[in-house]
Length: 222
View 1 (cartoon, one colour):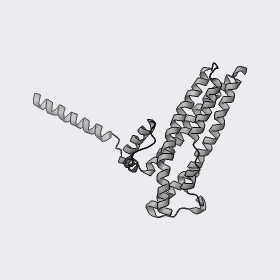
View 2 (view 1 turned 60 degrees about the horizontal axis):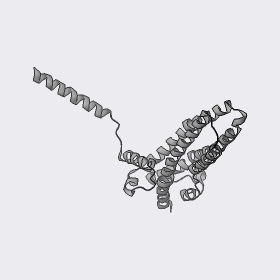
View 3 (view 1 turned 90 degrees about the vertical axis):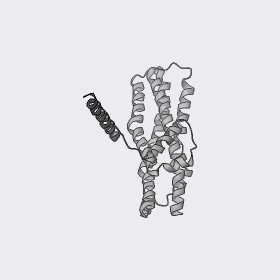
View 4 (view 1 turned 135 degrees about the vertical axis):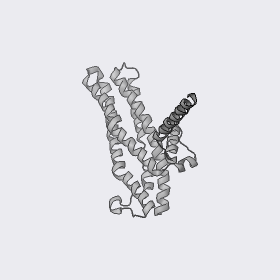
């Protein structure tokens, strides 16, 4: 009787283990490598083993950057805007300097949104067209993209995370000797976190994705 009970319990344990393993997400080599790459970037690294980079698919990199754009436009920036609104709603004459400093960010935000929209509407579709050309031989639509090349874009690409760092530095300089309200400290913390997010995004785009694409474009199109 005891032996039969042990067999039932063993069979049940094996079945539960199998169900747990079956329900775990299955990651590709590219996704695993991308997560390793992300961890390295978040640790502050900007140079990576070539073997690791080759394991990360360009499409997965592109999808990651597009997803980040969605987070910026739909979550991060609205949260910072809400903090600015909270500051304005509690405005006093003594807060005018703080509100002026928030204006630095609002000006930067317009540049960032325009940059993201350009990449979403033009750059990323061009990259998709390049990948499609590599896969199927389908010609790139030059009526849409003209003489655009990734080499041109890469050489003239601005680092918006550095611009945000400059904005935050200017604000820090102005408020060092001031007693700031809690809502403004929240705003500054959000800026700091956002700057770190953008730094990771910039490394993935400028140090990993674009150099590979420039080489691919040169190989495919000459």
